[in-house]
Length: 111
Image 1 (cartoon, rainbow, N blue to C red):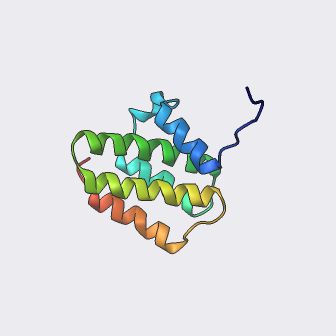
Image 2 (cartoon, helix red, strand yellow):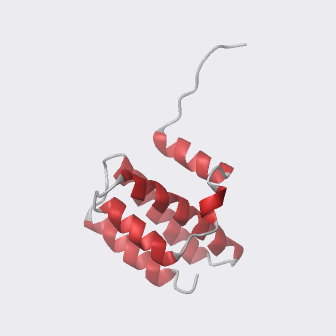
């Protein structure tokens, strides 16, 4: 038996926590407009708490999109999650990430 400690990358850890369902409470309250607001605040560098909230909301909406077989929308949401994670890590995509928020809103209208 080995006493090695496995350390995951921050991206892997965040995604694992989201998929494990540790944020179950806020997941049900996710709206597209709420996601837009928090994602924009995150991508513009306002607050890291906005990034965390955006990740939780995007995950909830991605699950909803999947349940409705809205796979193009789910793909947009997963891409937005990646942009938010990269912003958290200090390696954001700038204006391209901000444009992705609008594309996600258009591609997921009615979700």
